[in-house]
Amino acid sequence: MSGFAKLSSFLSVVLILSSIGIVSAEEEASSCVLCEFVMKELGEIIGSNASEKEIVAGVENVCSHLPTTILDECTILVDDYADAIIDLLARGVSTQMVCTEIGLCGMK
Image (cartoon, rainbow, N blue to C red):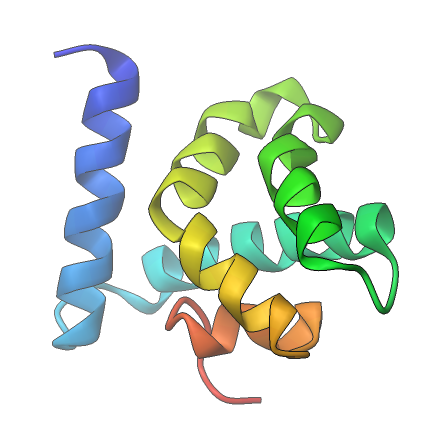
Protein backbone atom coordinates (compact mmCIF):
# COMPACT_ATOMS: atom_id res chain seq x y z
CA MET A 1 0.00 0.00 0.00
CA SER A 2 1.42 3.40 -0.95
CA GLY A 3 2.03 6.13 1.61
CA PHE A 4 -0.89 8.10 0.17
CA ALA A 5 -3.24 5.13 0.48
CA LYS A 6 -2.10 4.47 4.04
CA LEU A 7 -2.68 8.10 5.01
CA SER A 8 -6.09 8.09 3.34
CA SER A 9 -7.07 4.92 5.18
CA PHE A 10 -5.76 6.33 8.45
CA LEU A 11 -7.71 9.58 8.11
CA SER A 12 -10.89 7.67 7.27
CA VAL A 13 -10.46 5.52 10.37
CA VAL A 14 -9.71 8.61 12.50
CA LEU A 15 -12.94 10.24 11.32
CA ILE A 16 -14.98 7.13 12.10
CA LEU A 17 -13.36 6.60 15.48
CA SER A 18 -13.66 10.26 16.44
CA SER A 19 -17.37 10.17 15.64
CA ILE A 20 -17.85 7.38 18.20
CA GLY A 21 -15.45 8.89 20.73
CA ILE A 22 -12.52 6.46 20.42
CA VAL A 23 -9.89 8.76 18.86
CA SER A 24 -7.84 11.07 21.03
CA ALA A 25 -8.47 14.77 21.12
CA GLU A 26 -5.03 15.37 19.56
CA GLU A 27 -5.84 13.32 16.45
CA GLU A 28 -9.23 14.94 16.05
CA ALA A 29 -7.71 18.38 16.59
CA SER A 30 -5.14 17.83 13.83
CA SER A 31 -7.92 17.09 11.31
CA CYS A 32 -9.72 20.23 12.45
CA VAL A 33 -6.58 22.37 12.18
CA LEU A 34 -5.85 21.07 8.68
CA CYS A 35 -9.42 21.74 7.58
CA GLU A 36 -9.39 25.27 9.02
CA PHE A 37 -6.06 26.01 7.35
CA VAL A 38 -7.34 24.78 3.99
CA MET A 39 -10.61 26.73 4.37
CA LYS A 40 -8.71 29.91 5.28
CA GLU A 41 -6.68 29.61 2.10
CA LEU A 42 -9.79 28.77 0.08
CA GLY A 43 -11.50 31.87 1.45
CA GLU A 44 -8.60 34.00 0.28
CA ILE A 45 -8.73 32.38 -3.16
CA ILE A 46 -12.45 32.73 -3.79
CA GLY A 47 -13.26 35.84 -1.77
CA SER A 48 -16.83 36.64 -0.84
CA ASN A 49 -19.88 36.18 -3.05
CA ALA A 50 -18.12 33.66 -5.31
CA SER A 51 -20.14 31.90 -7.96
CA GLU A 52 -20.45 28.11 -7.83
CA LYS A 53 -18.03 27.89 -10.74
CA GLU A 54 -15.47 29.98 -8.81
CA ILE A 55 -16.00 27.84 -5.72
CA VAL A 56 -15.43 24.62 -7.68
CA ALA A 57 -12.24 26.04 -9.24
CA GLY A 58 -11.02 27.19 -5.83
CA VAL A 59 -11.65 23.82 -4.21
CA GLU A 60 -9.91 22.04 -7.08
CA ASN A 61 -6.82 24.25 -6.78
CA VAL A 62 -6.55 25.14 -3.10
CA CYS A 63 -3.96 22.46 -2.27
CA SER A 64 -1.54 23.87 -4.83
CA HIS A 65 -1.43 27.09 -2.78
CA LEU A 66 -0.38 25.33 0.43
CA PRO A 67 3.04 24.17 1.64
CA THR A 68 4.19 20.89 0.10
CA THR A 69 4.55 19.42 3.59
CA ILE A 70 0.75 19.17 3.84
CA LEU A 71 -0.08 18.62 0.16
CA ASP A 72 -1.03 14.95 0.60
CA GLU A 73 -3.23 15.66 3.61
CA CYS A 74 -4.90 18.57 1.79
CA THR A 75 -5.54 16.40 -1.26
CA ILE A 76 -7.16 13.72 0.90
CA LEU A 77 -9.33 16.32 2.64
CA VAL A 78 -10.45 17.79 -0.67
CA ASP A 79 -11.02 14.39 -2.28
CA ASP A 80 -13.14 13.25 0.66
CA TYR A 81 -15.12 16.45 1.21
CA ALA A 82 -15.12 18.44 -2.07
CA ASP A 83 -18.82 17.90 -2.80
CA ALA A 84 -19.86 18.89 0.72
CA ILE A 85 -17.52 21.91 0.78
CA ILE A 86 -18.81 23.13 -2.60
CA ASP A 87 -22.43 22.61 -1.55
CA LEU A 88 -21.98 24.44 1.76
CA LEU A 89 -20.14 27.39 0.23
CA ALA A 90 -22.65 27.65 -2.63
CA ARG A 91 -25.41 27.85 0.00
CA GLY A 92 -23.62 30.75 1.68
CA VAL A 93 -22.00 28.95 4.60
CA SER A 94 -18.81 30.79 5.55
CA THR A 95 -15.43 29.14 5.12
CA GLN A 96 -15.06 29.52 8.90
CA MET A 97 -18.05 27.22 9.48
CA VAL A 98 -17.40 24.57 6.82
CA CYS A 99 -15.16 22.40 9.03
CA THR A 100 -17.78 22.31 11.75
CA GLU A 101 -20.54 21.54 9.27
CA ILE A 102 -18.64 18.58 7.76
CA GLY A 103 -17.84 17.23 11.21
CA LEU A 104 -14.07 17.79 11.37
CA CYS A 105 -14.29 20.46 14.08
CA GLY A 106 -16.51 20.75 17.10
CA MET A 107 -18.94 23.59 17.62
CA LYS A 108 -17.27 26.88 18.47
